[in-house]
Length: 292
Length: 107
Image (cartoon, rainbow over all chains, first blue to last red; front, side):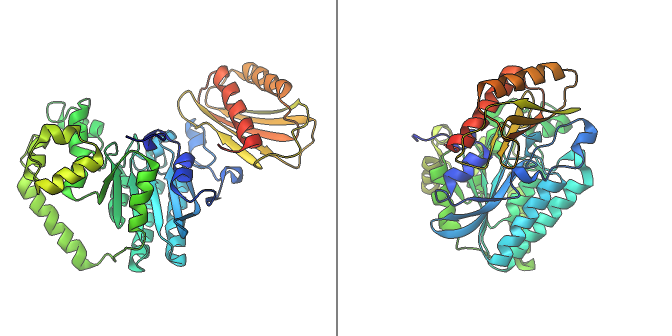
């Protein structure tokens, strides 16, 4: 399939380097500046020099962009005060300079150790994303890492104009373990990988229209998908939000009582579920177009 | 949490490096991040700052760092470490990775 390293296995800095024009990345607030969490030490947790997110300017196909990559291995890529402030600032800079902003997500959401500071940071970043969109500055979330995009980061990703996913990526609000804790193992078994991926994985999200592109687990494929979306953005308006709400109500009516995710696939026009399960992301996308 | 700093004698770093700083590793369970920086420091010592979530292993840390300073010309550099319980062998590996990135670049 692909010869390079898999996107989901790369580190945050490797992902950026592989995605943007060679040598074009300039990191903002790099590790030597030591802008670290003011809270973690009090809890006996070591800080990280970048607070779990790498941000900066770069070029993609010669076009100026802003880009961020979360570091999933550091407290699950969770958004603390500094981490969130870096994201907010990046989107604000993107709006100011009218340069598209690309967000490589790998996060379980808000860093609960930092409580309200993390929650507020997510809200401020949302606002900055909407500021971009109001100015028709494209905002693109890439979801293709081990951890996926959950909690506040799942919400943030859906605030962006577009979501590019790999089959490996997962998108949701509550994570699988959280759902199991609340609903019980009978309702949702978080150790059932097929179930988890069929409910929150890239293929299902693409089918439902939550992901705009489904690509190989490869930085080159992701770059190509992102490059196509850089020039496109639309403002969030009351009308667009209401239309989206209607769509979601329809979806809930149609699939709300379904207990088998395969029924959702079939309902969305997948004729051969077994073959679709084994297909690669782009193959799946082609099949489902045929199925519709 | 335990925090300490010490400078170790080391041969001077090469006059030219690919980058002014290099980072290796991630702060995660059983792992650590090493930030290696050059410039503005005495050329005969490697200055080390360690912050670790596991207290009580200062002697092992100092031995691992002294070993590295002895084996590699790292004089004039500053090493800063955020640790979440990495074993000494991993500390050594990350130091070598950071050193390699500093000298040759990230590739």
